Length: 346
Image 1 (tube, rainbow, N blue to C red):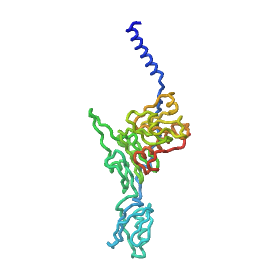
Image 2: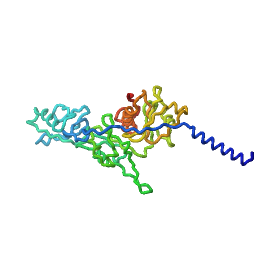
Image 3: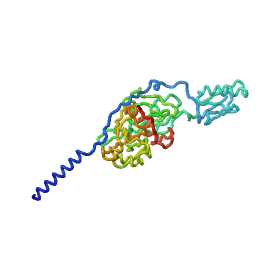
């Protein structure tokens, strides 16, 4: 065999080995598109009635009519009690300003002749919502009048404007597909993209006290390891993360984890792509390691599930809460804890 023939043979052998290796390398997980059928209830689009209702922390300006010496700014106590002048303590939690006025007037009858008590809201603290993330003035805001979701975002200065790239195209800075509104431990099925981009007023719900609005950045490069992992929460990796590298950063799975039923959830909350993956099969090389994308949620369950669609619907809501906690909305539950579990679906 001549030298040239040997080189040609070796190159052909190298090509064949590379082709064989690529053709026989294990495939990664396959994603399935799901549609989460959750719609905004018409009741959420109706403005609340009845006026402002007092609560702990509110500052009230109170005065007995025709007696300027009685004007005072009084703060509602943490237990909802209000103490003013010589009146006995009045529980004002959940009462309107007119109801508080009547209660104080009744309590002051022994000391004033037919007292008419004026009660005004000086500083609202109990009826607040939070707007966080990619807004100009993130923070807590009082609800002094009926406030829609668009109103709430406007009060926070609006969203950051898109950046113009070298081609003159405006690039989004807010991830509308992962923006959420959390109420009483649940994620309301608001489609932020339809509301903000398309002006769909069927998504413009009225906010309530305790609501959390979270508008994440499209530049957030984290992936989220949740459920039965040693250190639940976001994982930030410089290089393109894979399932195994992300799990290693999270300390691996817990002893009771059902690793054969792990999920990778990708994309919007309303229409996610979902892949089921057996972590042990990946570790043993039976299937390819999954390349993760920014915003991916890796969910490791505690118990086996049977119906993917119903289970994923529950996971998406719970995972959204956990992501919000890890991004700074700690008052939703255990502060700083993104470890959450749910019951397996049927």
